[in-house]
Image (cartoon, rainbow over all chains, first blue to last red; front, side):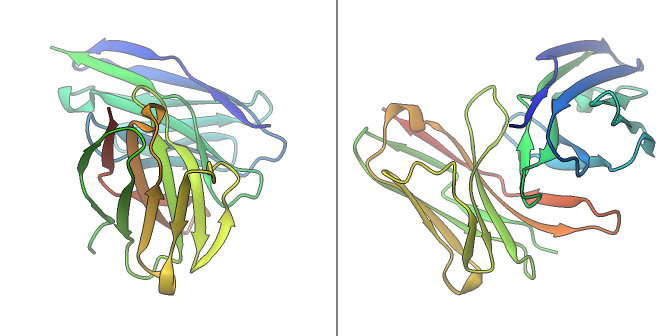
Length: 110
Length: 116
């Protein structure tokens, strides 16, 4: 089957850099996605990695190592508004829907 | 563009009662999903539609949950009878593949169900 593991909580201060790790198990790999969800809000797409390496989108970057079945989301210059839950996600076996991890709650303090 | 619309936002019912949730996806998005998100967990796929056909309903508890997508646009998710463990947020999403090949899901705000 497929599974994703990520830490349940991470804390950091404003202006800092934080890394949220995700390890996964899957029989066929079709890319790793990251979503952000504020409390009471809808999950929103952040980033996608199909190939090894770093993808940068503003303050957020995402990294993938397919040989290690591992990825991470890097958030730089943290702001209070970055306090949210972050989910890594894999396509299901058919490649048509996403399977989500349990999420990492990031708390940013001043 | 307009987002994914869901209603109602909140619903409180007694166990064994029934409830229905409605979703209108983004115009032009052929794929529609219903996910269940229990507090503190990630979204769990219940059912996926491609136009008005079911692609995957392997995780849908079919003894109590049903879903339909008439005319390939709006969708409804029904629970009958509800159990306490059905208390969750029911998220509807629609999707389009972007230029990188990512299957980007756009979620609605969700319908929060409390079963007493």
